[in-house]
Length: 217
Length: 104
Image 1 (cartoon, one colour):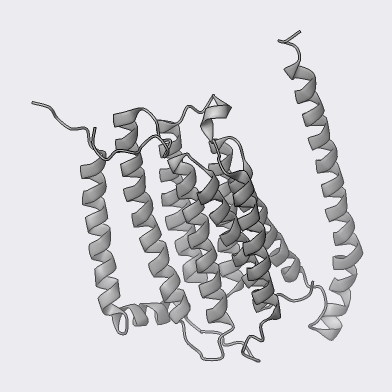
Image 2 (image 1 turned 45 degrees about the vertical axis):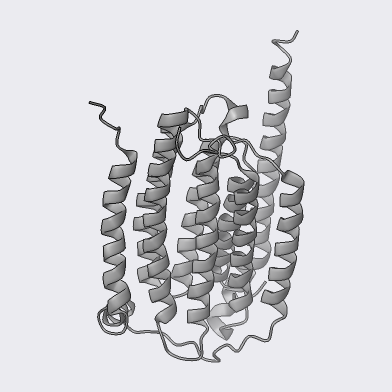
């Protein structure tokens, strides 16, 4: 009896997940059919202030980033946490594209997803007892954490939405982002640029020295 | 809903920051804490680039600062994971509540 009891629970979980997935997919399709597709026709005639497909992609990217961040925070298995981190980094990279920061977006893709995430996955595979879910991603102090989470969300959300931000009326579009950033790096920010290269060199050597196995003679 | 403005991006940053703080506080796995730190750094980056985009002055300084943050995050991740591996080799565990001593 004890051996068979986990099976129905798992079955129910899968069923609930499938039902939720179907409902979510139906809702998304319904929203696209209801709000986006009628909005596409007048956009060609009238222009702004209507639901554009690019707006929908923005909300998809922002939603991907935030939902994956919740996955990182609440997942019980650390493998799922690290894979959810991929969604967060991808969503943030998509937001950079929306903000006309193509160079930052590419750097995010190359350094974060290609470098940091792979490094984190390596560390996960090398260290934790992955198969044991209870030991994989233990968490303590959930109640204070939740209280702090709610407080931070409230305060930061209030500041973000209620502050009278002094924003530009007509947005400034840099014609060549990479060229301008290169100029800034080699003129105004030359010292921080060189210092950061020194930091990377020190990191390289330091990581090798720390992680190597000590040779006992 | 509507065309995304500055508050939309700031809300994304706020959510990422809050969830990152929650992750850092509640995890006892060192790699999990590191993931929370990455979330916090990404929240800061989103805010930097968003403020740069909606700045009335035509400057790209926000993007430059975001690039510095990315570089330092990569360095931090490499060093932190090296330390985690060293701790794991010594103590066979990366639970931060057990790694209470600096030397055996």
